Length: 326
Image 1 (cartoon, rainbow, N blue to C red):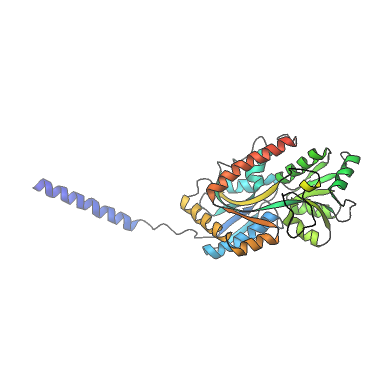
Image 2 (cartoon, rainbow, N blue to C red):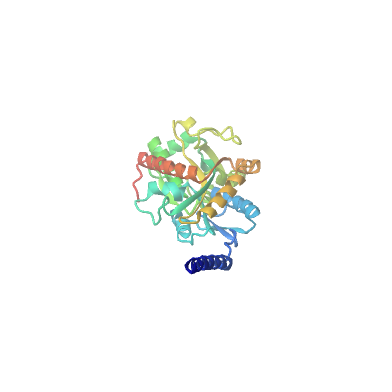
């Protein structure tokens, strides 16, 4: 009897201690508690930056905390990607990426300072958009054939601006299929490259259509073609490259959100849910349409599958273009 009583007292004591421990443990704070940093690998004015500022504003409204866009251009998007990969995996440092740091760079470089698959956790995919082939408005190039003819008559004399790995691969694939050569001039994003095209410092460039729009509207650039499989609704007179003598040419850019690997699953899920909800609205569709991007929203699992497929697509394109890995 005494043994049984001692056993009951012991069990009761354990229960009391467990209850006290639970009461003493601090409650897990609701994410987010503080501002979120959204890192972008391109300068202000780029298509990715425009998307980042929109999603930052909408996330602030949904989550109730400031979301600050931080531009970290240059270094083939290494700088921005590494800033996120090396950050604390707590959901307060995110990457708003184009395909360059998370897919295209795999096709361009033998060794990356980060692993775009294992070092980054997918959150959500946002949008997709065609690139534009542009030349100075003051140039004599009126169409793609005119540009190709000039490159053929002046081998190795024309220069093009490359603001990212995807722009470079898109350009080199175009040049390879045209059977001509041009010199690559690297830039820290589309905006400075397009500024130099408009000024006539370089001869042409591929860039996201949204990034070219201000200079097109100002009459400083001329658009020759777009890289998607259909004409832009806002520019029905501008042909695709497929219509300009390059059958099957299809190179587009996309944007998505990532976090450092090992970010807690509940945090990732909350961000995924918020971004998918934001980009499933008519307002977001209209926002993207204004820069001739299309809604391409998906959750984390589909984003990861798409990312892996896109790595293969850009790698195949780089191989076709004869671009050796750096």
